[in-house]
Image (cartoon, rainbow, N blue to C red):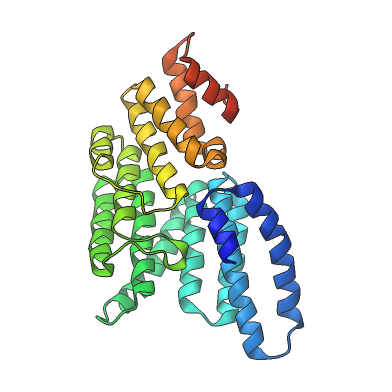
Length: 289
C-alpha cells in the first residue's frame, strides 16, 4: 500500500496503475475469503486506502468518472472496516472528482456534510492531528470549489480557516495522504488565486513558498499554477519555463493534466505563428497542437 501511495505522490501513474491492477483484485478476493471479523476489517481498510490512492491518481490523470467510482468504493470499504476518518478521506477524494466533473452542487453537499462532522471533532481540544488534517484538507477542497465558482469571499474564508487549522496542526503532515499542513495551504492560495483571475496575488504568494518538503506531485502542481498565472499575464517565456520545470519533476502529470495542457494551448495561441522552440517541444511532448 505504501508503494502505491509513493507512486501517486511522485505522479508515476503508469507504474501505479500496474501496481493497483495487481493489488486491488487480490484484496477483493481476500476480503471475501477470510473468516474472522478482525481479518475482514483489516482487509477492508486496505481496500479503502488502495481505492483512495486510485481515486487520487485518476483525478490527476483527467479521468474523473473513474476517480468517482474509485472514491465511492473507498467509502464503502471504509464503512465496512468501521473507520470513520477513512470514510471522510474517501469523501475528500470524491469531492475532487466531482469538482473536475463540474458537478458543483454535489461537491458542495459532500464537503459540507464532511465539514459538519469534522467541525464537531475539531471542537475537542484533544482532537487528533489526523482528524485536524482532514478538517483542514476539506476546507481546502471547499476553497477550490468556491474558486471555480468565482465566489471570492467564500474561497478566502475557507483558505483562512485552513490556515488556522494548519497552525493548530503545527507542521506539514501527510495524514491520509493529503499532505495537509501550512505549506500546502499556501499552495492552494496560489491555485485559487489563479482560478479567480488574480494572477498578481498568485505570483506574490508563490514567491514566498518553500515547497521543498512536499512531494514531487505537489511541487510540480505549484509550478503549473505559477505557469497559469504567467499565462494570464501573457508572460510566454516565464510560463514555459515553469511548465518545463514541472515536467522535469513529474512528466506524467504535466503531460496528462488538463490544467497544464490548457496552459500550453493558451501559450501557443499567445505566441502566434512562431512559438519559441522550448514551447513547441513541450507542446509536442504533451500532445498539444
